[in-house]
Image (tube, rainbow, N blue to C red; front, side):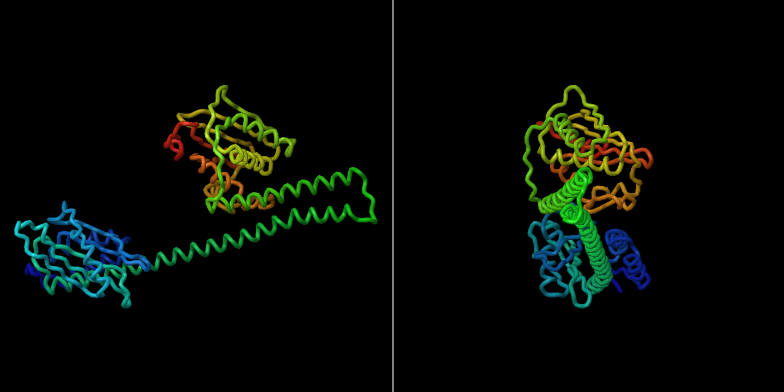
Length: 410
């Protein structure tokens, strides 16, 4: 096989090109490796690959290289958008020869060759090559580019299959997560309802007389389980609102020291044995935030401390960084294994080693969404046997958050 230049392209070269395309880790790497070889046999200045996806109006450019005289050309014809659409419509290789240009400017005379990338009669994409100023593409050039197109089509098909597989795996994970969520929520709903029903039925029995201390104990259990049920339902509703973007934030000036002190007082009523210490600077500027939602974040963190680190002191520290307020909530509890930390803020995630505790796996997910809605960040550090520390970064009112801090960089 020869080109218009008279230089032959032999079977060994075609085999080498095919092997490069089939063994490369990506389409881009494969094409980058074969272009110098291909160009030594078939002259072209620009080359582009368009991928066609079902439902798209126009093909998408997934690869483009300017290798010769058109490197600085900005004309639309340089990448063959129009001819790509023609190939898609006709389903076959198309050649386009330009009209003569009196100025003699080669860049105004693009010769184009476009061939479909097909598998099983389905067009997956289009391979376009451009020569500025000629020469005209020959039959030999067409055969070479159609050969390359066939090899590239296999890579495109492979990418499509891998994407389908990835989507299926993602859907399977979502289904599995949903099933686990339903199982968890069913258990979490039945547990408080079972206590409430059981102790209420016991108190209503006519054949038994309960001492006042027992009656009070039963009512306290009913009250506590009703609170657990209310918290669970609230988390489910908040999670749904956050997922759909329908949670309304009422932003206003907030004094974080005052807000946190109020949260602490409420937490101590619910957990009288909780040991909470605060470390606040003398002067703490306000921030723009929703006081109700920010309070929800710290209530969740203190509830978790009481639940998962019972008996441990909890330290809440507020410090000022450039344009940013940092709030840390630290306990000296059992800590969280390192392999669970990356998943801690995921929806429905629960530490498998703490499944005996009540929880839906929504609390920290909600915390993260609320903080992100405040243009902030929440992160966690933990050492097994030493404790856990949550760090919240929030922009100071009227000032942008430091991007270095918001991304967690030092």
